[in-house]
Length: 142
Image (spheres, rainbow, N blue to C red):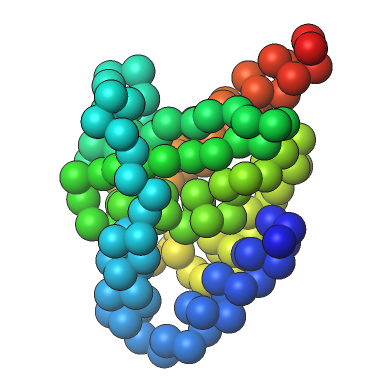
């Protein structure tokens, strides 16, 4: 699936819920599906700076595509990183860098997060884009 198709699927899923409490509950459920990060990758190098909670994100480049795993010590934050991984996992670095991630605004996520969680979301996106930039450079050197 393309990034756009996955984003549209997420928008449709969140549209099923009228109340934000239900959307938060769904986000928590999604966090339980997060691709588990190996303990070996739970290092300070993989800790996302700028998040109030602790979020580890690991990226691996295989066959020109980036694959992510993550973990967090906060359930809503884990749900947020799970959404980002769902959209961007297995995509090319170029597609990740070109993605506008419109689903974040479309589902109302940014406006319903506390300022610290919103900053954490921005830090997660920035870290993913940093991985994609590094992977793009590495791919172009080959």
